Image (cartoon, rainbow, N blue to C red; front, side):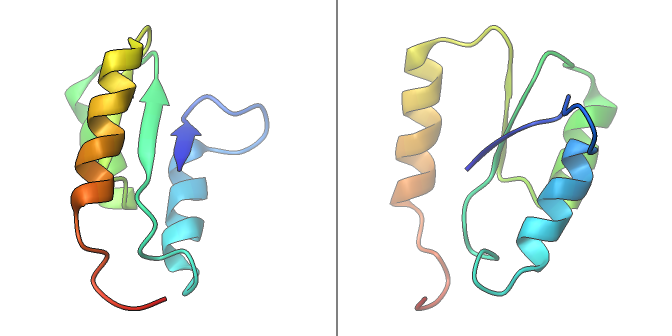
Length: 79
């Protein structure tokens, strides 16, 4: 799942926390997409539960690499 940090009414970090807190979605890989590239934003993303972080503008190759890496990882349990 891709989540942009710059959402109009909701903080992207809060969205990720809510998704990871949902039992049915807790094992779903989440990738942040953002124009922010600071260390603090990346750390906050990891703490919220994001699995990866892409900075805009990104290439299709970057998206493909992240997707392949995340899909290759075991989910940690049956759904």
